[in-house]
Each structure stands twice: as structure tokens, then as C-alpha cells.
Length: 600
Image (spheres, one colour):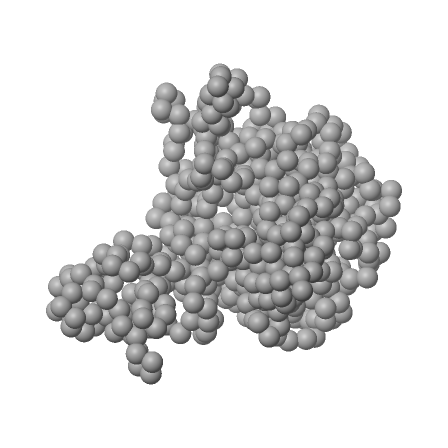
């Protein structure tokens, strides 16, 4: 018998842009040091951490529109054009201010900045690709319950049984694939054969086994790409050297995540108006200006002015956030009604489909219902002076996920160890339980259904752990400035403590913690690697170099993975850094379509 699943298990959710977070300040019981009102545990930051990254009270007051910090008060954006980029703390201050700006009330538009016309939702275009929809009354954008897990080649990503992360290129039967054989000669692959008890064999057109095969490809990091070939006994995965890789699944999949309150996690991608205008300008064949490049995101005052001038000369609203430069956001949400303390979250209303559970291992879409969503995570990505690779910062709600043990430096210069968190969390029923970060839900792109990744468990919540509390592994050196994980952790703890101590009253933003940020040295082209003091190669991720958001990179946390593991290419071109940039249609293309439709 089929049963309807009401608790927001959705692959597509229509989101009404009514921002409710700032309206709940009178009910918010959070203080600088108090535990929240809900039943879930919360991150407790050490209050005796060395103040290695902070901001003065006078400077903090200047962040607010009225010149003084107020509860749930409006904050102005960080100036990315004049960004100093002298040390780690500059990047962390930028991150904190941008979060406060995005989640603060907007007197100009009502609601919050994030929900204002300053930002566009990135949504599917029925004609293919993506399009941008400006936030406005009556616009109902779309959220998804899973994120594309694509690598630098924009191929889907999955792990093998050894836990290694690979991109996967799927080859069709008869597709032309070239191989370099033992003699160094480039030949064409005939077929791939798989015997029940033996390894997969690559054969040439004559049916002969290819000795010491090397797949010829122009892909980035070809050693980290698997090639999937159909055989008579199923799909086999081959690395570039012709070795078969033991895979847990027969195809690369997208994952979904369910919280312990049985809410699916919803994801919404946004870009700001400067991003939208820049993308439109460089794709406009009539636009010519030597002061801006299509090969990297804007970082200078001249480039900012160029984008603003393009917008004003083409009838677009002049950006009020021009000094923020180009920004891309990824946000994650859960259904608020099942939370004991929704007043401690930023909320917005949504129309979400229900699902019919055909079985414990298969759920299909079965209607819609109205609900409120609560913000649980956000990636803030933005270009700044000297860093066209962009700063990649992330924040989470303090009740999301437990931390394992970590170290920091106290005010006396002593290294202290914080024990692993215990208790019950929104994404972990018992912090002491193992295993953790095990995917239980796959998303079928062909029919938008949910299937059980582990049939014996079914479609169910899994326990999530933030493996690297502030983006640094124990006993590692995460960046060129901090000589230990404890020093790096201390900077993040210190800036969190400083900001939370200066935000007045029961400001909702106190319920969110800054996890960290990454960038590259000198704005060099990211190469996907993680900082290593013994490696002089440019392009390694620095800052909190193992950064991940537990609601977005749940199953991709590793000592070798960072934001740039997937978000890099061979250049600083926007399409190499952003997974959505090249798929988004320019605004002028959208307007031309609207005009054409109106004339029909």
C-alpha cells in the first residue's frame, strides 16, 4: 500500500520570498553564552581563546547602517573593492560582515537583504540550462533537495570503496575512445570485457588485449577521473591506467539529506545583481570595454564601475551593493514546523511537494503543501580585491552537527583540547554513535524520486558529523600563517566570540557560527589541492583549508578535499570556478524572450 509522506520530502520546492527571521526577535531567547531554547544541543565555543582575530567595537559599529550595533539591525556589505587582504583575519572579518549583511533586515525593500531584489535565484530554465529570477513579490523560485556533486571537469563525483573521490565520465557503447598502448602508440578502443572472476580487459578494434593501456584525455586531473564503460555483465569503472576500480554503486548519484526531525534539506542557489550584470555584459556581443575581462570575476574599482555603467545604460536597476562585487550563495534549509525552537532560525514560507512512499526504499512526488523553511547553512562566495578566485566562506546553525575533539590556544598561550561533542543534534541523534556521514538517500534525476542507498536501512536520517570543526585537521598545518591546527582554530573561535559578544540582545544571527573560509595565496589559480608546507606549488587552498558545510558537503569531508577540489579548472575564468556560471542565461536573453512572448 502506498502512503503519503507529508514532512517535506521534496525534490523541487516553490519558495515564496517572505523573510520571517527578523520579525521573531522578541521571542528569541539566545544570549551571548546561553544555550538555545530548543531540544537540540548547541556548539559551545571556548570563551578563553586567545584573541588572535578580532574586530574593535568602534569598527563593528561602522558595519551597521545607523552607525551603532542594534538588535537585528541593518548591516552594510563589506567593501570588496578596498579589501585589504593582509592576513587571515581580513578574510574572516569580510566573511562575518557579509553574513550579517545578508541576514539583516532591509529597510529599502522590506524583509532581509538576501530576500530582496539585490539577489536573484538561480533556477532551471524550461528550455535548458539555468536562468536568474530577481527576488520580487509574486515570484516563486524553485529549491532542490539535492546538490550537484560535480568536479572540476563538471562530471559527477562519487567515492570508491576505499573512500577515494573521483569524477566519473560515462561512455556509451561504441563511443570513440583513444588509448595509448605499451608501445606508446595511440589506438582506438574496441570494447571493454568483464569476466565474473577476473579484471576488466580493454581490447582494441581487432579484439586483442591492450597492454599497459593509458586513456588519452584532455581532462583536468585525469588521474582523478574514472571512465565508466558498459559491458555484458554491467558497468565497470576504469581509471586512466586501465585499472578496474571497485565501486559501491553502478552509477554516480546525487545524494539527499534528511534531518533528525524528518525534514528533507532544501537548497537554493542565489547570485547578486553585480554577478548578474557582469555575466550579462560579457555575453553581450555589443558590449566592448577594455576595463573588464571575461576571464576573471571583477576585483577592481574600474571593473565595478564598468558593470554599474552597463546596468544603468541598459535599463537595469543600479546596484546598491556595487562594492560587494560579484557574489554567489548556496543556502540550505529544513522545514521549520518540526523544530521546537523555530524562533531561533531565519524563516521563510515555501510550497513543498509531499511524497508517496511506494515502499521503504522508494518515494515519489505526490502533491504540495505550504510550509516554512528554516536556514541551517550558507556558503558565501565573493570576489574581492586581489582575489578573483573568490573567498569561499561558510556558516551553520549552532544546533546542526556535533564536532569531534579539537584544539585551540587559550589566553595564556596554552594548547587546550576540547572533547568531542555529545548529545542530540538536528542532524545527529546521538553524537557518540557510529558510523556517521553515511549516505542513505539517492536522488534519481530521471524522475525526481528518492531511493534508498542502503536498502536494509531504507530512506531515513543518518548521523552527521562535522569532521573538521573549523576546517583544520588535528596535527595539520592549514595555511602559511598558522603553524598548527590549534592556531587556525583559535582565529575562527576568536572572531566568532568577538562578533557574538558585540551583537546586542537576542539577535537571531547569534544562533549561527562561522565555520571558516578558504582562498589561494595571492589570488593564484586554484589547483584543487590543500595547503601543505612542503609543497611550493601555487594554487593550494589556504585559510581553513579543509572547509566543508555539514549540510552541503556531508559525504565529501576529507583531509584531501576543500572547496577548490571541485571548484577549479585551468584558469581564473568564472566558468572554471563556478558550477553554474556557464549554464546561466544572460538577463538580456531572458528579456528578449519575454518581449517575444508578449508580442505573440
